[in-house]
Each structure stands twice: as structure tokens, then as C-alpha cells.
Image (cartoon, rainbow, N blue to C red; front, side, top):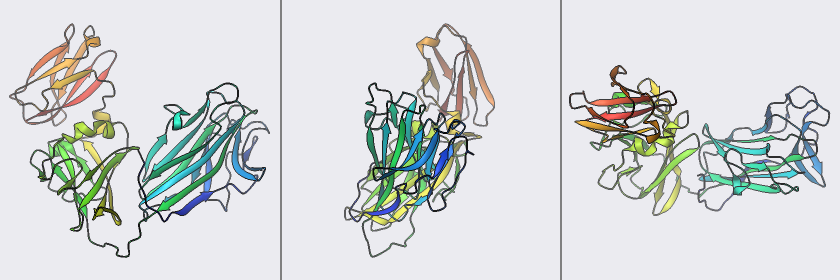
Length: 412
């Protein structure tokens, strides 16, 4: 997800080697502490540190320094100070993690990267973890994961590194041996001060929306007021740009595209034909995490990345009074609508497992008022006659004793 290419000229901009032995929390001491000279802190559940043998301490063994955790019971997290990475093309994060003893499946490391306010948990690193943890201890005979160096490359503005761990026995330890951030840049003696921006495009007309040309940083975009979910994002590049990398992300999920033809857009062709119903394409990206969206562009000139000109904005996307993640999540499909968009009728197809349930179907109009209700049982299809419905975006809710799901219906 974060892997990027970078050029030479690496520079270490953050490093922690835990060379202050004895700093930390041990036994039934207060669950707070500070290291005045260190650029990191500990947080989490310290209530499990009840015995003198329970601790999270910086230690030295055989010339090596590390942060070691023993019998924490609760989850405790190492967290770096915010690291400014805005001046670099990319950075590489590395964390050297190890274990001593025979860990249980409840013991784990979680490596979390906070990039520009969005959280990304690295899961199942090198197949040594799980779908919820970076590294886990679950193998017999003291095999576990041993010592692992976590490495990830990314780009952005502000980075916070967070490494959480949990350990439930005094016969085993978890260790953070080193945390480092190395930055990479392509030197350019001519900083570009020209203005660049993003525009919100109506994919049905290929024209920008009034008020969002350009999109201001921190904007709130209400799709209900726009009356179309078919949108795209265009990057208004400097004249020298011959290629642009555009990306959009939320909560650690991201989609990127390299565009080599004007207009530079997240999806579309050189004639300005925006080919995708963008919200449908991005719905899992936008609906599964709370928080704002980050949109960025990096220009290329003569085929080379131009690091000085990196444009980044953040904005919120709404569906009327609801954030999209609340109104339109469908991790497990219970029904489908087609055609959609539609202008005369649309067919509602229910999942076969719902055919014997008492289903209530509710449709809300673009103003949020209840527009249509019907009860269903013993059938899994329903045709809706919509030819007299006003144009706009409707919300269709399927409700039963076991499930509830919402989808949008576009009436053209």
C-alpha cells in the first residue's frame, strides 16, 4: 500500500536506539513517565504491571540497547513525536523488533503508521502476524517470529510511528531495538512557486462543480446538494508537467494513478471523459473508515519526479446529514439495484438467504423523507416504478430481524 520508489541522497531524520537504560515503567508504579531527552513516549494500559517483575524498560544487554516489555497484560504503545516529512520525496521507516521465550497467540506487536492524520496498521508482516496484528506469537518450541526488521516506504507531510505490544508472562519478553526514519529527495535548485490545485468534476458533463473549482483545503462536499455521485478529481498542473501521480486515501486505504495526458485526473482519458462512476469505484475506500480524505498529486517533468511541486489537500465528503461511511456501507451484500442509475424502473434483487425472512423495504427521497415502503416475504425480487419520481439521489434501506443495509439509487 505504501511502497514507493525513491532516489539516492538518504538522510536519517529520526532515530531512537533506547540508549537511556532504566527509563520506563516497572511494577505497581504510576502509569505515566517521561524521558526529557527522548523524542518518544509510552501510553496504554499499565494496570497489568502489578508485580516487581512486570515492566516496560529501556535496557542494555551485551552492548545492545532496547525497549523491553515483560508481563504487561494490557496493551502498551511506544509513540514517536510528530516527524515532519513534507520536504522529501519519500521516507523509509524501519523498526527492529524481537522476542525472547516461547510466546502465546495472545502476545503480539502492532506497527501503526499515522500519516497526515490517517492511521494504517501493518498486518501479517511477512506472514508472521495475523489479519489484526503485525507480528504474533503462536508457534510451539520457542520458534515464533524471532527478530524481524519492519520496513515501509511512504510520502506525505507529517508522520507518527506507533508500536504497540502485549505480553502475558514473566518468562518471555518483547523488544523494540531500533526505530528509524530515513528521508530521500531528488535535489532541484529551482523551487517552483506557481500555484496548482484540484477541481471537483461532474463525470456526467465533464464540467467542474461551481464552488469546487478549485477545491479549497478543508472543504466539505455534500453529494446530496451536488445531486450526482458521478464525480472525479482533476489536478490543475503547472504548464511544465508531462505526467502526474494522483492519489486519494482515507484511514490507510488508498488508490493512486499515473496520468500522462491532459487533463490530469484520478480516472479518465485524454479527452476529459471520466470513465468511472467514481463513488461506486471508491466506495470501499471511502465508506469503511471515518475521517477526512487526503488528495495529493506529484508532478513529473521529462519523465522525472519533481519533488518541489507536491500538492496535498484534505476535505470531508458527506451524503446529506450523514457521512458516507454511515449511510452507504455494504461489507456484506444483502441486495442489489439495477439498473442504477435508472429513469423508468429498477429491479431490487435480494440475497437468497433472505427469502424466508420478513423484509421491510424503505426508500427515502433526496430530502431525507420516507418516500416508499413495502414488506417482502417469500420473494427475492421487486420492480420499482420510478418514472414519476423526481430526479435525484435516493437512499434504499433493507431491514429485517437479522440485517439492515442501505444503498443509493440515482433517479435520472
